[in-house]
Image (tube, helix red, strand yellow):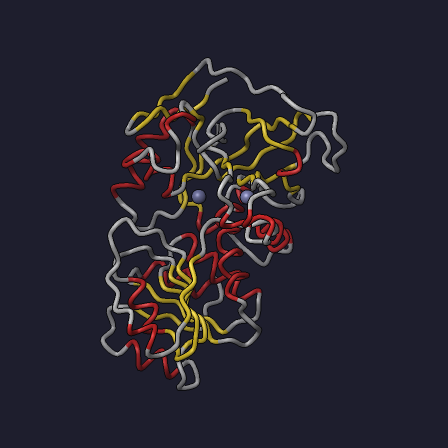
Length: 344
Ligand SMILES: [Zn+2]
Ligand SMILES: [Zn+2]
């Protein structure tokens, strides 16, 4: 089969004779990949890695935001049937480490991820455990399934935050994960303010249900945000921008005694005054990837139409030009580009 294979830093190759995946144990299934979405993490691995990818796991088929159709199932009993549309739950937790046993799967020390440790979805076919394939309703367009993985990242952050209906929350950074976080928060009954500098992102935030939008360059933004949060400030602020100044801004927007959830991954060292946390008794919580149950929650929201990923699909390309039309384009210009999907 054809597959886009990660060998190392700036070395990703389109292989035309990569071995077809086979069922190796009774819990495996084989899917025909419909779409795999390219994520900033893939580009980081290509540009600066190997980072999360361990050199001993290379070469490895890249791609971790995957949807496909089940074409073969191992002997173990499963509710899946041949022909089912599925999203790949790309993270396999060990279920035996200290953190997994405490119910903190997001912090598992031995997790294995598709496209990083095991062959991923930038290929025609993929093997994956059938208990990590989540059925997507037949009425959901195939391309939407590829955005279930970033949706699970948004669900993880929102579920970790403990948000309650009616809470005043803000989302700083309206890229793909930020805009999905806004939709998950609206489905949870929160009052949502969105912050970004890109007008097209703020417009999408509004389309997705944000109650207020703010340009972070506005000199009076703090006063305006306090005004829309009952004069108190936001109960919870989600930081999804990942820039060096975003954590400080997000903590500033958080009310006294409120929570800041950091979802961004920082390539530059953020600047921080820790007194901002101490003096106002704020809580700062990190959230990365997803934990058991988050992807199922994302699929449910998508099946119910409470999440609409369509406006986040900026382009669909083939396996032939993933590096030029995908990685290079997303690395050089983030303007107006959310997700680029690959149709193998
Ligand atoms: Zn991703
Ligand atoms: Zn574990």
